Amino acid sequence: QQQVKQSPQSLIVQKGGISIINCAYENTAFDYFPWYQQFPGKGPALLIAIRPDVSEKKEGRFTISFNKSAKQFSLHIMDSQPGDSATYFCASNKARNNRKLIWGLGTSLAVNP
Amino acid sequence: DAGITQSPRYKITETGRQVTLMCHQTWSHSYMFWYRQDLGHGLRLIYYSAAADITDKGEVPDGYVVSRSKTENFPLTLESATRSQTSVYFCASSETSAGTEAFFGQGTRLTVV
Image (tube, rainbow over all chains, first blue to last red):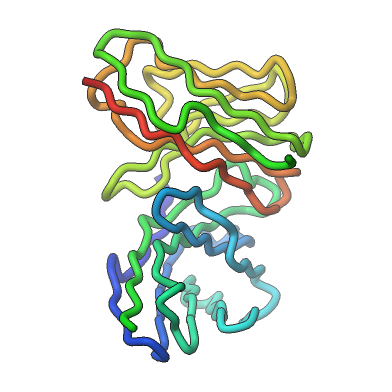
């Protein structure tokens, strides 16, 4: 079973700090790397996604950094806010095979005020 | 309202009973998915469907049955509920298989006693 290994399992950050969550994938054929955000009692929602033709993608305070040679990608949350407190999931797959997204186990982020 | 809805939101059932979880989406997305979410296991794919009358097994299909007679509906049936099926179940849909965003429902919290 191909895996996506996500770390850390939990993370506590002070308001205004940088939150960093890392994921490592195994299959070099993967070419779609989304991050999902899940608030308690809600379903996951797409936060940001990247494809391997770029090394970085930024949307507001959220940035994905991608390292193809290391088979790693990470989510950076700049100026973290209490409203960012949620569980974050990375995932990976071949873009043409979205039905088989491989998910990380999630990171529970708490941002202290 | 457009979106993806699951029902019921909460369900308690007894061991051995059959229970059906409903999922309805209004986008006419081709792909629909059922996941279960358990602490320490992240999101695990139970079944998915690429179109009406086309379904396939995911990672943990045992004990579950799905059908998709209409594009917008994708019910999940537990034929004979077991305590190990106590979980939060999420339905999701996506437009295509080409690495597009998956939209999740609010989830159904199922407790088997």
